[in-house]
Each structure stands twice: as C-alpha cells, then as structure tokens.
Length: 530
Image (cartoon, rainbow, N blue to C red; front, side, top):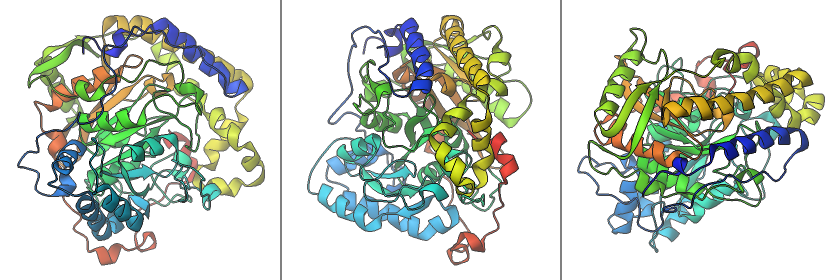
C-alpha cells in the first residue's frame, strides 16, 4: 500500500458532491457527481486477509475478536456452531440484565452455523453478529424500536446485512436501540432498557446513544461484532462509552438501502467492533457500490482496509500522518483530559506520527452551533409526514423532535444547508491543510459533513468506566484512520479489556417491568436526539 486513499481523492470534487447531496434533499434521489480520485494502489482484501495468531490470553471463545475466531475456524480448531453456542449461552444467562437484544434468532443462528461448519471461508465465516433493529432483515421483524414499525416484516435484507451474511456472518438477533434511532435505547414510551456493559447495575451510566444495544452486545460478549447507524454520534458515542472501536465511514461508503431512514444526508451505517482489525473486516464486507442507493455510486473503490489495520510493527505507523489537536482538547483536570493527554503522548511516540496543534476555520462556533445542526430535523420528519398527521402517539417519547422538524421554516432549512457546504469547504481547505486527521471530543460536525470518524478506547475512569476519543478524517480516509488506530492499539492494551459479568441474580431481572431503570421524558428528547 503506497499511499492512503485520502491522499488520492480530489477534495474539491467531494465538496461538489456534498453540495449536490444537500440539494437532493429537496428533490429526492438523483445522480450525484463522481468523486475524482487517482488509481488505487490496492483494493479490498479477500480470502485469508485479516487472519491472525491467537494469543494465549484468549481462553473463552466469547472473548475472541473476529480475526482470532476466524483464524481458529479456518484452521479447524473452532466450529462456528461452538462459537454461536457460546454467545447464545451468554445471552440466555445475562441479557436479562443488559437488555441488549429485542429479538434473538437462536434456532436460525445455530442452523446456519452448522451449515457453515461444513465449509471454509474468509474473515467473517461463522462469526456471530448483532444487527441494530433499523436494518431490514428478510422475514424477521424490523421495528426501529418504534410503535410505527411494531409489526413490520421486511421482504428483503438491507444491503449491508446481505453483504455481511454473504461473507459468512451469522445473525444472532436484532439489538435494542433508541426509538427511531433518536436517543439511548429505551422502550418507545421512554423507559430505559439497555445498560452500559461496564456498569450493568447502574442505568444512569449512558451506554452511548441509539446504537447502544449493539455496543452493549459486543462489550458484554453477547456477539463478536455488531452494526449500528450514526446520524449524530451513535456509532462513535457508544463505542467510546463501552471500550469499543467504532467506525463511521464516509457518506456513501456503505449503502443505506433497507435501513429505516433518519436523515438523507447524514445517516451512516458502520461497525462497532473490538479493535481496528475487526472494524476493518466488518467495513470491508459492508462497503461498496449499490445500484439501490445513489449515494454509493461514483465513489473511489474500497481500499485494502485489512492491510491498513495490520500494524507494520509495534511503534511504527504505516503512513506518515499529522494528527491535529483542536483547541481545548486536553484542557482541564478531568480524568478524560488526562487520558487524552496520555493518548497524544503515545501517538507522538509512534514512528511516522506527529501531533500538531491546529486552529479552527473562521466562524467555527457559528457554523457548528445547535441552530445550524437543527437543519437535520426536517430531513427526518419529511418521510414521516403522513404518520405525523395521523398518528402522533406512534412516535412515542420522541414525538417532540419530529414535530420540531415538521415546523422548521423553509428559509432556516435552506440557510442551514448552505452553511453546511461552507463549513465543509473550510474543513477541507483550512483544517486539513494543517493535518491529515484530527482528534475530537464530539462527532460534530464530521457526521453532518459526511466525513469518516473512528472511535477508540484510551483509558478508564477510577470507577472503571471507559474513556474514548474520536479521530476525524478526510473524505474516504478510513484506511488512514484504521492504520493509526492499529498502530496505537499495538502499543496499548485498553481494547483487550472486558467488563465483569453482572452480579445481580438473573431471576430478578427477567423483565423491564421488574426493573426501575428510569425514564426519558418527551421534553428531554430534543436535547438528546442524534
């Protein structure tokens, strides 16, 4: 791999495409201008790429990464059925405490595992996965955790699910999520369900956003990996909250076909994984052009993400990379600030990486404030206008946010879309002249701009709660992000740590009604919505 893909992409053509995408919100799906790029040095890995030596520390198969499990399966030392059984056993024993799943497909998963055990495949062959419940699954209810979709059974799989299963992945079940992908996982009426796997007896610890069921499933070792969606932080936030490596790709890298929509220009499907290699394996399977989604067309081909996520050697990065540090990133005396400082020191000590202070583009605070961020609201309300007119109760606790979107003025929406294009131009031309990626304390505004982000663990609080950070990259910079994360994880061990199992007696945790986990009220939702 001679150069990362972000160095081969014409940033101006990405800006033109983003402008066209913003305009497409008013007219529906249209053909978008292609993104100009140099010929790739290499394309997506296949076959045995991503397979690794399994360390002696891995004694419980539920603790294995994708790469480790796939290696054992390929060598005939582990059967897919054994791996699935181990995860189903943990779901049976502990998910009454975690409530990560709203549907478990035990019989179907075991049947598929037995069939896959008679063959050999690549890096996802026989791997048990958890699917966020806004991804269509053929013949299986897809509720988006909403009254509106309570009985919806899709006739086909989402493109991302189809690609994961075609690569050998096994669907264990559907995960709890924020109602219509808005808040942390609750029932549609706001009762808190999923808890953070690191503090299962304390529901006040935020599990991280609407993909929290997927995050808890992976962190609690109920699945080897999972998928989520991000519109305003719901891949990166639960990954940071639960010691995972989450990757929100560039807009269009993964098809949104067959996913219940939230925002046409801001929805991003992506993996929540245990380390950089697992995230690379998952994204390799999920990514690529889809004739059903114009946002995926005219883009650079998927590069060799698995090689990018393979460390050259401990202490050395694959590519020279300038990591930008935003003002205030390490300010204060909090445990998070201390962890960020230490993480930057580690990164600066890796050969090929440099840490540089950056200044933010002009009018940064104005262009990233809550008012401009609210332009996402009409995009989510528009597809649901008939339901808003006929069935307000169907939106449950999140109804206030949907009404806000329906009532936002057209002039505000247009100004916001134009401001987003201005902001993207300044990020591409000003911020990324100073660095190749940037560390962030928030997913804003990269998710709004369609730029890639990678969340990774960097420490723990004194109370044992994970601390993470976010790397934001240039358009189609997933390979560079993965390479830096892999280099960091080669010299740290945060990502190897697993939470203790719940101590509460499972018999006392059999139903949400038996638990007092609190409630999110409608008036709180607008401030919590992604």
